[in-house]
Amino acid sequence: MNRAGVIFCVASIALSLALVMALMPSAMVPASVAADAATCKTLEDDIEVELSGVLEGVSMYDLLSHYLENPPTLQAGAAARVRQFGGC
Image (cartoon, rainbow, N blue to C red; front, side, top):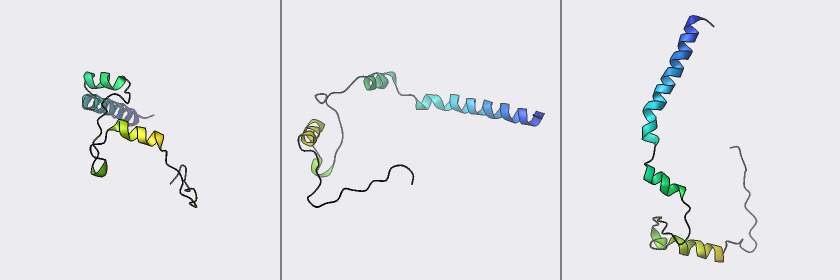
């Protein structure tokens, strides 16, 4: 490899590391948020999700309980939806 190629590679790596070091603090979350995210949530916990429209004011516990008790079903005579997996 010639001298210009080595200089380009070293400069590219140095610039990439400098960019990562400069942007890393802005990507970090506070320690309290990370500790809260590491704990498991149960339905009894107050999980806050803002819903609008007809579901405004309905708790997540009620929504999940209703879904588990009344799972969605196919309508009579309706064909199953065709789903494409992968690709465009």
